Length: 374
Ligand SMILES: *Cc1c(COP(=O)(O)O)cnc(C)c1O
Image (cartoon, rainbow, N blue to C red; front, side, top):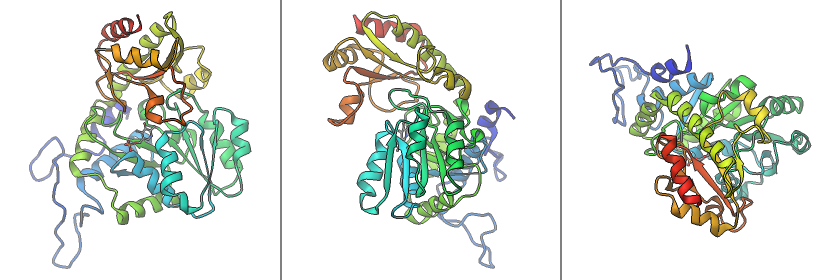
């Protein structure tokens, strides 16, 4: 079935006890054993598994076309669980502009673990190839990337990783693209990671993460153990909220992509704007690859104002409809000066503003930006 149908039906069941159409929230932490001491209904204790978590996992596996999914308490809990599955001395390849939290997890939480990491420009396939080593175990891809919206060719990454040997597990952070716009597992990627906090939840009211796999592999099994015994589980209510958000995911993401395209076109010809980073624009370096591997270009974009850090901060300050806040993927449009969030060693241009385009009317969004830019 098509993704709109799976978004509404996958993982959902009519409640056999009451006929409830909407999945009930199961707050119980513990589940009854049979007289023989077994768990005939498949649940024992909510850290191990819970009906709401299982429903969300079934739905996500279906949306990504994977065999299994694990839901975590945050997107970074997914990263933590994956990195915990690696051995000292293992080598990771990740994008040079990877989501900053991944660098923090690898560098500050696992600094003493003895991992080797190469941060490379994965849009340059030769640089990526040169970074692979016999000890490489994890290849992390993020496309589109944050905040420059760089596009990585997933098929090319898979081909080179496979050529380098059977020990490499490839993982794509699919947060920006969502399963609606991009299907990394179809490109041969082994696993997809999501911050469900963003588009999947979709309403800026719940933190969560997910890992979906195409096939059994040791890093997925280790992530499962790390979660069950380490405890980074989402609450039943968090899972319920995320699953409710997913009902409307395909429609939201398509509307946000349409809105973002209009905003990008408006900004691209504005005299106060130096450069727009949106893969939907034909002059974006990754446009051709994006057009091939995505069904639309997403709701995220960034732009550089003509001027300095102060000019950019001034534009954000003048916005009335765009809310100055971090995060993305919700119904409200957000504007953010990334460099000041990322700190002094950031590589993000100081005159750059990132937009998460929401579900407002584009006439109003564009009017707000026009006012702020003049
Ligand atoms: C937000 C985000 C994360 C981290 O997810 P949390 O839910 O905040 O822990 C990881 N990757 C990307 C691309 C993100 O945008």
